[in-house]
Image (tube, rainbow, N blue to C red; front, side):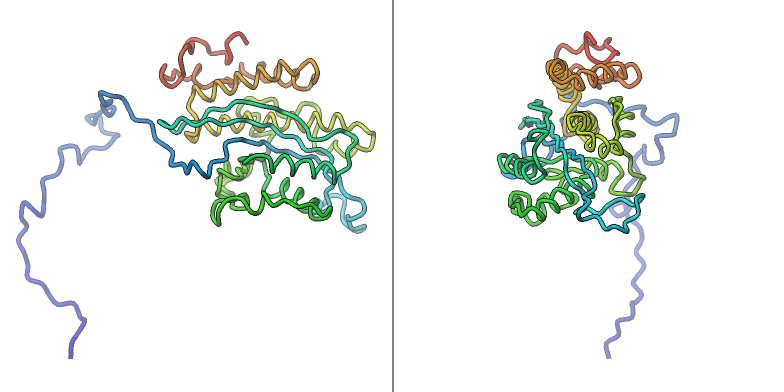
Length: 338
């Protein structure tokens, strides 16, 4: 009978080929005083890390999205406690605001650069919900967007989809674009739907921040007098313009947080981040005459720059190659001229 028991093997003497000499630095650690202080820089400089990107699957327009809602008195159960948050279908959408950003990708490095196109609310203040949602889906169908939200997987998009279902609207671009593993519904498909609240918390491994808390961390203005809890009263008083303005400042905050996250994760470099910050500030100032809330956002952001610098390449001592041509290493106040 054959046995599968392990058989004793003949003892072999160690040889030089089987026991190579240890490297002189093998016993050292980074905590040893004799260990090398730094790794020598290659003569040609470090090669940038290239992102592996399927160019055919790229969504090269960013859409920052935020919505404002009020409880639907028709669908909300009469016995639903006032202090309980309504379920997705029971939220009536009263404002949808977006920031649209064109994305260019350097084929040599994979770094992205961002060019702001608009910060606006959909439709007109007098539009009903069905018309507002229909217009949103027409916009969404028009390009291959990379959606960026804050808690959008748990709130914004479930509400938009549930209310679209109720109104009999079609949203094929949401469900049919992409592949089985890369599409708007996949939690980790960040080229499709990036929920920054979920991502920054390591998908729930650490406590989730509010947009207000994340904005404060990067120096963005955050809430500027309005709050989500005020929306119902503003709508009841017919002040939908203030609701739309509040929603637009929320997506502006979201864009600022996104830019800092994009730099943190290597999607863009310091020069790309700072150029996008410059572009956003120019846009806010140009639009500020017609939309005072955007001018107020810009002023508060610049003021916060004394606490948390708006730019990264001009404050961290980054090399000229990373900070970009013309960067002033002595400029520590954020934007030049600010």
